[in-house]
Length: 304
Image (cartoon, rainbow, N blue to C red; front, side):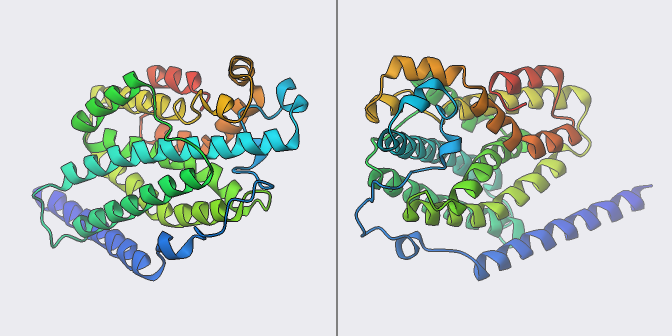
C-alpha cells in the first residue's frame, strides 16, 4: 500500500512538472510587451466604445434607449476603465497570495519558476490596465473601503485551494467579457489589443489555477471543502460587485441615481454574467466547491 501511494505521488509530481514546463514554454513562445504591442501614442478616438455595448450595465434598459450614441460610448469607456481598475486591485492580491504560497520553496521546481513567470505577467498587466484606463479618460476607480479592507484580510489569510479557486473566479469572469471585447470592431483598437494580450496570457494562468485547485483539494474532507467553498464564493461576490464602480455614470455625464436604479434591475446584464460563468460553476461543482451556502453568494452576484 505504501509503495502504491508513493508511486501515485511520483506520478502526480511528474504530471505537475510537465504542466509547469509546458506553461513556461508557452510563455516563452507567446507573450507580449504591452509597451510595444499597444498603441499608446494615437489620441483616443471617441467614436469608439470602450467595451462591447451588450456588456454595459445599462444595455437593455429604458435609460439606454434614451441615451445618444455619444453617451453610450462615453459610458462603455468608463465601464471598461472600471473593470480594468478592479482587475488591478485583484491582481495585486493575486500576486501576494502566489508569492506567499511559493515562499522558500524549491526554486528548481518548474512550478516555482512558473509562479514567478505568472507574477511577472500580472505586473505587466496591471501597468497595461492602468495606462489603458488613463487613456480612456477615467479616474482611478477603486472598490469601496470595506471591500479594500476585506481584500487585505483575504490576501493575508487565504491559502491552498481557496486562494487558487478565487484567482480562477476573477480571471474566468474577465476572460469571457474580454473575448467579446477583443473581437468587437466597435471597441477602440487599443482596448482590443489590451484585451487580446490579457486573454492569451491569462489562459495559462487559469490552467495553472485549475490544476492547483484540484491538487490542493486531494484528500480534503467535507468540512474543509464547505469552508473553502464559502470563502471562494464570498471573494467572488466582492470581486464581481466591485467591477462597475458607482461613479462611472456621473463621469459619463449621466444621472447617477437613475442609472444605479436601472442597472440594479437590469436582467440583461445579470443574464450576461450568468452565461459567462457556466463553465466556472461546472468546475467548482466538480471540485465540491459549489455548496448550498456558496451558491447563495453566487446568486447574489448574479453568477448563477
